[in-house]
Image (cartoon, rainbow, N blue to C red; front, top):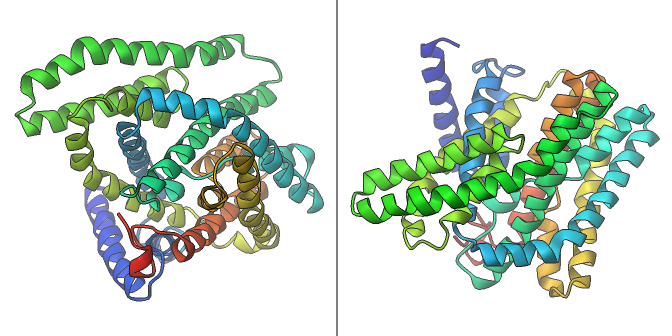
Length: 389
């Protein structure tokens, strides 16, 4: 993409997003939906004003990394361990239920077994961005809701990494021993490395130069992206690395300054992320999978909240929190798109299966955003009662 094209694309994205956001706020609609629609309209499959959706999506991925880093900054390590212990069984049980749902829908529409398996795997996960971008953090109740959601999403991330390895195994036909060993050792290695660097390098630098805000800002950026890259190099996701980097400095008083400094950058990249989702949708192929994708999306929007509510209630959470958490986790995930892309790339599934997952994911993003905005407090609520930071 030429330099002028990059500048023009950024102009279109943010000028268009500002216009769409204005209209959406006056109409009391979800901003996320507007960004997705904007991408579909001006992207490669619409007016073709922005052609390189892949580059935009790569840039937008940075927004997810910052989102997880900022979440980690608000969660102490001891609290995280406690939450993960409480939600492990919940995450495993719900993942099995959702995988069975996706597999059943795919089989009923005549998809081959391996394609149905990939669809089932894709349905297991919920969206980090939709769940957490629409969650207020200033009320104690929602802080606890956020903690529960984060712990479930983190465990889903681990399952997603295992799922990606399974896809590789299915493609190769045997177990890659080296990759399996690295998967087992990667997380402990990453955590130990982060603890050592944070204690002997990062904290001394914070203490020595804490009055120079520009330096603290740059150091935080480098820490977040550096640990994210290390995590990726170990075979984990960028998101897991960024989250662990945030948790590592959560107990430091300077974490509040870091969080406030990085929020505008996070929002910049997240707008690009939702735009890229819409731009990546092949509108000419949607009609081929529209019926099964719609059926799958509707079932996901209905079954996920009920399943999460049932399990969280069993885990002694209040019925109100259980329902709210279920609705906020009631969609497919960015990992669903990644799994579909990788499975298609290695030849495990046909293009129609990948399109089905893509369309169903976007439909659940849109449907879930509306359900959350209309029912629960969010930063973009449809009324003053539902609008909270």
